[in-house]
Amino acid sequence: MPRVNTLLSEYSEIILGRQGIPIRDHGINIISLVIEGNTDRINALTGKIGKLEGVEVKSILTKYREQ
Image (cartoon, rainbow, N blue to C red; front, side):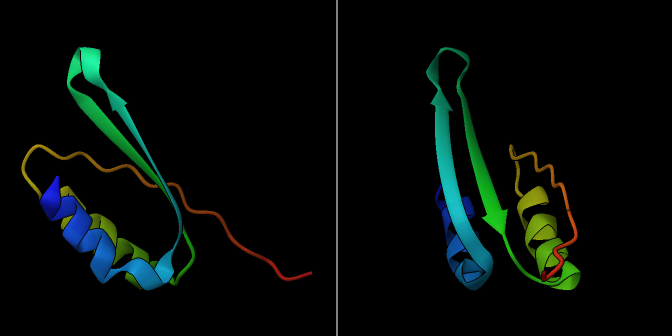
C-alpha cells in the first residue's frame, strides 16, 4: 500500500522496527511497528493511517522508564 508506506516514511524518525506479514489466502497484509515517541506524535501517525480507506489500525502504548 503506497499510501501507508508514504506515511511511515514521514514518521520514520519514531519507527524503531517494522515487520510486514502478507496473508495471501485471505488477501490481508499486516504491518507491525515498534515506535518510540511522545503520545501526540504516535497519535498523529495512527490517526492518519486510520483515515486511509481499507486500512485498520490498532495501537498499544506502554510507558518506558529509564533504570
